[in-house]
Image 1 (cartoon, rainbow, N blue to C red):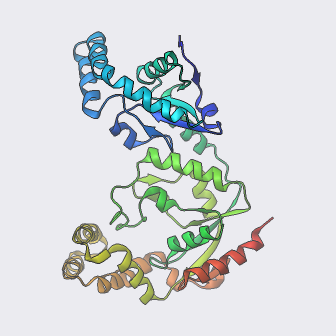
Image 2: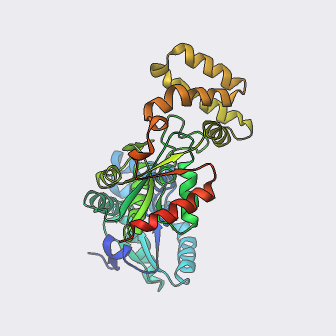
Image 3: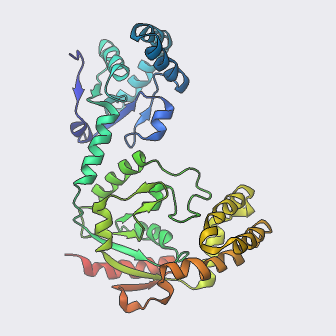
Amino acid sequence: MNLHETISVKDALALAQVLFIDMRTPAEFSKGHIPGAYNLPLFENEERVEIGTLYKQVGPEPAKSRGLDIVAPRLPGLVRTISEYASLGKEIVIYCWRGGMRSGSVVSVLDMMGIHARQLQGGYKAYRNFVLERLKNFTVQSKAVVLCGSTGTGKTQLLYHLARLGVPVLDLERLANHRGSVFGHVGLGGGCTAQSFDSLLLAELERVNHGDYFVVECESKRIGNVYLPECLYEAMQAGYKVLVKTPLALRVSRLCEEYVQDNDIEQVKALVVSIKRLEKQCGKRKIAEWTKQLEQGDFSNVIETLLKEYYDPIYGYEKAESGEYAFCVDASDFEAAAATLTAHLETLRR
């Protein structure tokens, strides 16, 4: 029986002014957390492993005793930090993995110090199950306006300019931290975890699901390491298709600027590693030739050849007729394209 106040995931997410504090280790936090949560770990990564090993090999009492030794000196600092957050006028909700000892002990201490905070029932595990269930049963009510177009036409940049004009957009590649191609991770660091992507996506879906439409870039069901939920993928498949066109030379220029910033050596190495993944589709000879050109700094030639011989034939947008799409826009100038598309989308309002 809890002697402190608890709150369900659903009720916690409905709070108008809430601050979630995640007591898990930095490693646990990095895999996934409630969006906007602040990580205030009770244990560091190595300490958590140590206590877990002690629990399994020796028993729960020695593990608890060791945990107390580690946590006791930190409690005053933790309490002061949380007290500062509470003074901002936000509701404090504290969680760990399963709503167990880590979050429960901290909330109990806060209660003794007169600081109001609540423990999240079931912890992050309950939140994760909540997200998966919501995505499984989510109904996309707003019309999906899907930007289709060849690699390098600037669909992602067009989303940015549309957002600046107040158009509701859903930028899936930003959420996934991946561009959705074999080179999608280059220059972006690691991709988003499934846990983080699902949480961010649910929040974005709820944000754009109240209007007449939202704009999204055409994607396959998988973006890097993450997958789109069935509800969104089906909405995109049945969506209002817009063809985005851009001259080849400009596409090449944009891709060079995006993928090879200031001839960054690490990015070039990443491009070389990535291009070798196309060996099965393009053959060893071509891959060897393109690798050599990349290492020599001949980026534009490699990119143009890849577009002509690989990406464009796969997607087929360069041979598509404008009549096959609900609307067509030239994205040579992003501001002009965004203004043109925004004006056209007014016709979709109910």
